[in-house]
Amino acid sequence: MRRTGKMLLVLSFYLSITTGQAIAGPVKSLSFTQTKLEKIDIDPTKDQTEEYNTIASIDVEDITEEFLEENFVLSRRDKGLGEVIMTVEKLLALGKKIWAIIEAGRPVVSTEMGPAISVLPNIDGTGGTFNQMENWSAPRVRRYKVTYKNLFGMTVIGFTYTVYFQHSGSFQGAGAYLTGVDVEASDVEVMWGFEFNAASKLVTITNVGSIKDQVATATIKISYAAKSVLKEIRTSESFYVTGKGLIRKL
Image 1 (cartoon, rainbow, N blue to C red):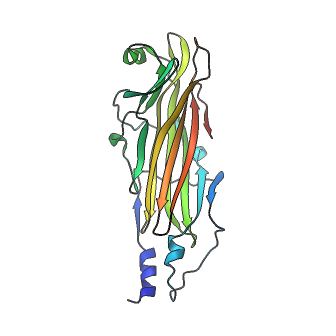
Image 2: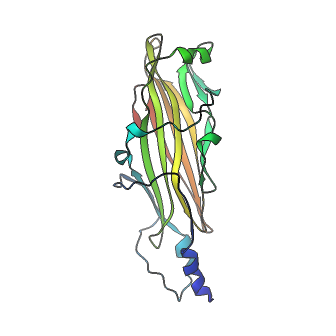
Image 3: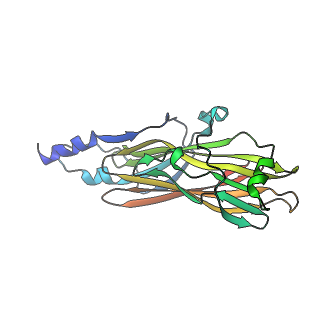
């Protein structure tokens, strides 16, 4: 086979790992654009390896409206509250500060993760305190689809991530706290010749209420990196969630 035919063969193979169903939706924001994306026809008489390996755009779509939040089921296995990872005045955060959601192009399954993040009142005997808390909400969910395209207009990397949490937990009739703050990936597709990883991190916690009636907040950051033989591109998104149920993309 001639060298010019190898490119066509490469383009016909890709690695697809799917843990759910991808859902289409309108593009809400464009988080990165390296160059203008134009349709380029594959010329079998030329070596177009560079065009194939060049990431030309990254689109981020908010597909929450296409996703039935009430059907969402918490998938992380119960591992307790975890260790204390952050304290601020009368608040403390428990769980795991940094956790991988995609490693080597594969989604990290929930059973391999540590505990989800909880932001609770900072008093002695936190474990017992959590058992006395009440009024927890159903999970709130936001879902985004991320698509990387090369200069041919082909999707070379794609994945969906879901941010979710429970809010409004109170202790002795006061406060609005957080639990189950988490990010998970699904619908991961990585074509041949590309590497992809993603992770989440708790950045900060704050109290936006009063000392006696605290309202917990948390900011989490989702970072992902795509790499080809030509270049590595790192991108991140941050989310702000509150004990009153607000979720905002920063």
